[in-house]
Length: 301
Image (cartoon, rainbow, N blue to C red):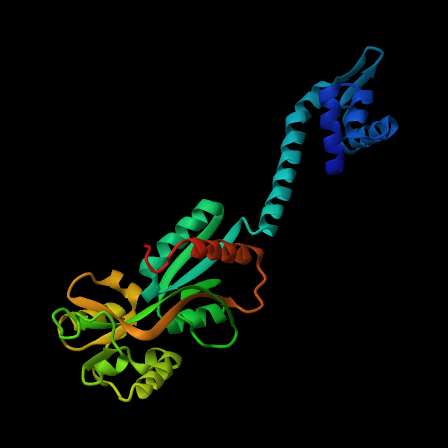
């Protein structure tokens, strides 16, 4: 016994439905002789007779009738496999690992995941909130397929800007400058500062240092903390001031006041490894791009 061809199984099923070589051949748009040859070849491959061909027409043998559901299962599964390949080519199915910078995860992760579940329900996602250094290393090393972050300023990554928002001075409630509608960075020259350490991400801190120099001072940093939540707690306790994106307000509702800094803005980007042509990644990038065009991603959550 040899394995029949998929084409032969399809021919068999059509003939089993029509029970007429003439009608089956017409439906399959092949010559009746070709259909007869293929059915004969199928019977020879299986070593059994599937049809009785008599003067009263064509009928299924008992074995042929038993073979119908089995043949249909095979052809249905083949069609499903072809459909899955097509969906994969269109980026509708697959697995992706997403990283969210800790400072954007609170407001960005929920709308992104909701949009993906709505538009790509068969896409399986894993998500992780992490710091900037492991995020960049994870994307460059292939551990993460796509990341949502502030611009990391490193080569090897492709990016797309999703949102732009003001950078704010973060002051304790009751601070003399807290009632202002806008501040210049120079207005905070005499304040004690709490900040993340330079080692957290050198490219960002080099930019910060340049901005402080342009404002005419070097900040008096009285304490360093790695997390934004800790910085906000220190500001609320009155230990000092800091500067953060406006969306960080979602991390603490009391004890602090956010005042926009004149001319200071920060971007939120999605980044992925340059040269990654995965269809499912491209589809996800398009979904999130469309989301960003219709939703203020700095205000959601």
